[in-house]
Image 1 (cartoon, rainbow, N blue to C red):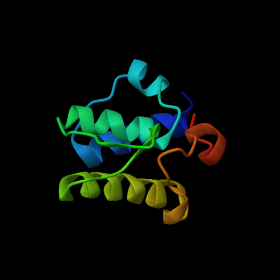
Image 2 (image 1 turned 180 degrees about the horizontal axis):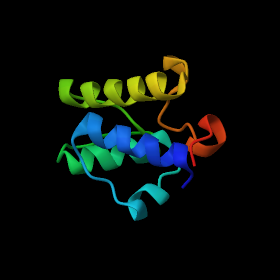
Image 3 (image 1 turned 90 degrees about the horizontal axis):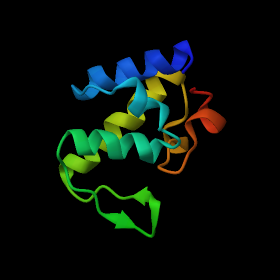
Length: 97
């Protein structure tokens, strides 16, 4: 993982008060993968919508996590809020490696 990726993970850990190992971080391909990890660590329930990479926040808490995650992308990488989707690829779409 490049420095920008490490900095990004540190920002995520701080924003959600979770710990993400280097091994876990290397497995993230999409924004949805990262969201799922955060939700698992926060012991929340995910509800699938259509496909494995498409998760819809179903409770206020889920929406709060999703919106906070999207906000981190916007603040850290200046990515348009509407571009941060569950199936967006971290490396290809945002250059986070």
